[in-house]
Length: 224
Image (cartoon, rainbow, N blue to C red):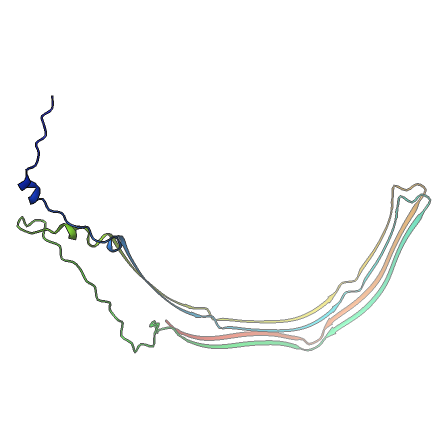
C-alpha cells in the first residue's frame, strides 16, 4: 500500500512564489539575419562589319499533271527551260571593324563613396554565470533571447568584360536553275501520263579583279 501524501502547511503555501511569463509577441525561436551585397560590373562592347558583293539568280520552271480516278484520261506535263546567265563581279568588298575599348571596373562601391556605413546598435542581455552558485537567476530571463541565432553575410563582387570584334567580307556568284516535270495516273484505267522536262542552261560566272578584305582590329584596356 502506497504511502499517504503529505499536505502542505499554510506557511509552506505562503512561501511559494510564481513568475509571470513574458508576453507572447516578445518570444522568438529563430533570429535570422541575412546580409547580401551584390556588385556586378558588366561590359560587352561589340563591333561587327560585313561587306559582300553577290550575284544571285535562281530561275525555276515546274509542270505537274495528274489523273486521279479518271478512266480514259491523259495527263501530260511539259517543262522546257532555256537559261543563259552571265554573272560578272568586279569590285572590292572591304570590311573593317576597328575597336578601341577602355573599361574600368575597379570601383566596387555601390554608392557614391561619400556616405559612411551606418552600424546599427545591438543590445544584449547579460545572463548570470551558471558556474557561480551565488548568482541569482530570474526565471523570466530564461525565455529572453533566441533559441537559434543565424547570421549570414554574403558578398559577391563580379567584374565581367567581353569585348568582341568581327569582320566578314565575301564575293560570290550563285545560280540555281531548276527544271521539274511530274505526271501521274492514280487508279485509272486506260490513261496515259507523259512528263517531259527539257533544260538548257548556260552559265558564265566571272570574278574580275575582286578584292575581299576583312580586318578586325581590337585594342582593349580592362582594369578590374
